[in-house]
Length: 247
Image (cartoon, rainbow, N blue to C red):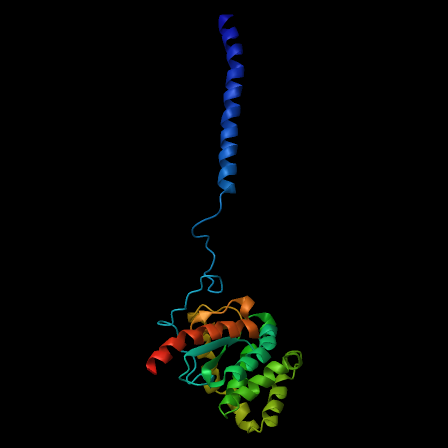
């Protein structure tokens, strides 16, 4: 009887203790969940975020040589674009890039890199890059690039897109037979492949991706005003050095 009473009298104490333990566990869980996440979250590095750092090109593939470049080869500022001819945003960026090239002329060096994405929606992008390079073998890369971007919607939706490209070649005054032969050959394809190697070695996995002096431009700056701000900033860095050199 005494034992029964003792057991009964100890039951509330055990229940209260259990409640405190549960409360402590719940409180600890809530505290850990509420703390800000720090350290490595396994997210890929993104140079477009504040605190951007230059991409190390020491081990990067060189890309097609010579590259498709405009401006001055000795300019202090290099703008390098990785683009896909079937990318709608790249087509939208095209006139902006043209404006930047005209605005700065020989004060910058602009390099275009082929980066056709291997996705179903861009099923013609690799062939388009090869077509542009085939035109480049006859000195008309920029002209073909302009036609491909300007008329992107038309040839993308047309099953006879290769004939459309041949029509572009004829319009540009190219030797169409040579153009078609070069599309089927290795030279133009190797240039595209070399640009792709450079893109991968620099961690480029989307288009358009633009670097100014090795620093990736933020997505919010992929417009004329944004690019101008970044380029002007790089030009300003070279001004003191130039002034000292002239003393």
